[in-house]
Length: 334
Ligand SMILES: *Cc1c(COP(=O)(O)O)cnc(C)c1O
Ligand code: SF4
View 1 (spheres, rainbow, N blue to C red):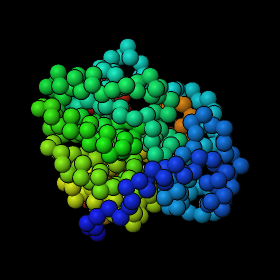
View 2: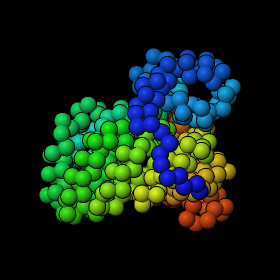
View 3: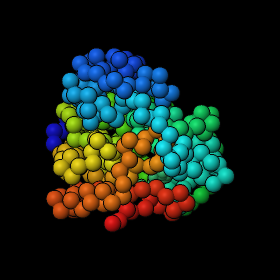
View 4: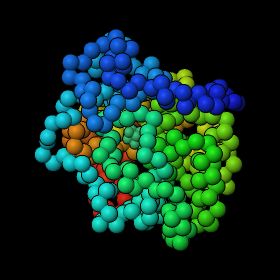
């Protein structure tokens, strides 16, 4: 692992990279010198791909595993029985998960804050692609913070989104500081795909913010394929690691992208090389528009067994799924 001292990116570089991200499928395909007759440029869940991520795709390969994660295609419009907008009932307030504006409480010891509706990339398989973020987007975090402060069972606050690293440095520093002042909160966890898809977001200011917190910080990144990791992510992750932040990864098991034991093993090894421990391998949810990524339980368990036989135990992520109403993520077993 390399250990740089200073972030090599200009403080505002990530914002300009984000504004010049690919938003039109034709442009991305032209950049990659490839074609897909099934592209769907009018898809409601629009395409968003930063160039730094597109550069890790293989030119000329219409089935590149990174391209397949982000390119809108026509089969998303298929209606498949059993696939719905909100299979987890997250948007259904009757289920009582939203305990304050922008605060979701499913599990006893941790509460999840929706910090911003946006992401730096739009992943086609995303289980939140239909989530009504605008309705849940809090005008301020005051009520969420008050709800956390009022409940001593909450020992960990998860910042999610969208992607919490899309907040600017000042807003993020302020939010972390406010959470850390709540006495019973021991840890803050950031769930972010940004260190992988937009490494230039790892600015000196962000590193200072991570360094300055009084509670422990855990960052769960999201990477599905070793090809997503390159020299830039290595640098970004090493810098985050050096702040004392614990780095974990979650992946989604995706047909045609990483549903192969060798690919999953290589992912675990590459993550470790970049200072990240595998945490979860999620079963895809039955979200409308994502049925082409779906992997059946039996195959998933078989792949997981193969990983176990090939990897050091600590490099095997837990194979899990969400089950509405369960008290935690549920381990998938054969
Ligand atoms: C996944 C999730 C968590 C975190 O669960 P862990 O098993 O601790 O990683 C917390 N809250 C919500 C709403 C979640 O979806
Ligand atoms: S970064 Fe995460 S939340 Fe955002 S679109 Fe991708 S999977 Fe969904």
